[in-house]
Length: 352
Ligand SMILES: CSC[C@H]1O[C@H](OP(=O)(O)O)[C@H](O)[C@@H]1O
Image 1 (cartoon, rainbow, N blue to C red):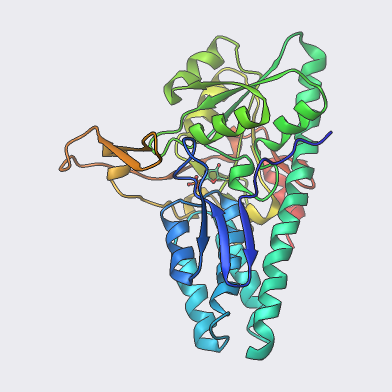
Image 2 (image 1 turned 60 degrees about the horizontal axis):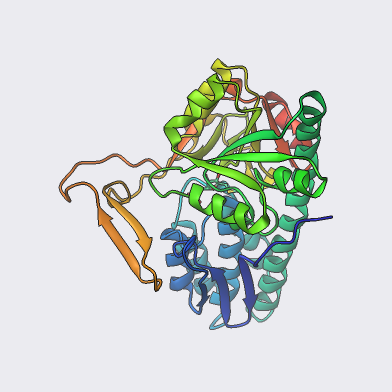
């Protein structure tokens, strides 16, 4: 039995790109119909749509949307540049745009729109299959734990790397959904993930899917591992360097340190499209710095869905807000890809 995806995160018709507005979740499910390149770029930059594989697919749809009006070289290059400038860390965005450029640049303008729509749809379809394969390979890890201890398998995750961040069942959460479908008793420790609190998206997803979970403050993770209440950690990734160093949401590295200190297996779940074979190591991964108000202000929705903001620090408070950190390969037990669970230093075998 496969766990149904409650709602598509992305769909495309000629003149519109439809996304689930993730800034309205978990309070309200709002679909946005984006009708311009600028609207797609804003949606990625503002994190109305987020998650490495999903922003890649959304950008591909944005290129197709831009070519609705004109398909000349200038229009194509403008679309690639605008979308490529939205967020620097998730390599899937740049992988998807490079793939669109590779297909479209050699074509005459009259053939570009149809080709762009085909390629965007292919990226979407492939990600669904990739997520399913990651789920099955991760399921084997969870099943092995379930066979060796009574009670639920307790998985900890960070941020949101579920179906809200991809086109299918997600990356880090896909093994969880596969375990649920296989009848394995599983529980998820969901780390809130300050400052944008994507853990609330994970809690929403798991509630929608009927998976047992508990929301925790990020800083509780280490104690839970020290108490032996975590069987394994699985997170997503935004960019895996060729040596296995991995960039993911800020706070991932701290969980990897706590996992190593307590003998808890720490896995990254990521498709090969998240591996940047041209990036030698973690130090070469660009880390996005985001606006300080993400730290100073809590953003939510009120009962009728209007945006609500609660300032928790004075507007002139200096901040630091790196959106990602890098976990060294030495702290990663394995990388769960669609081709299997890889040891970080063996990624070169997957290079195209
Ligand atoms: C499969 S999603 C990968 C990754 O993307 C998220 O970042 P953001 O929410 O800023 O788009 C997070 O790091 C996830 O783990």
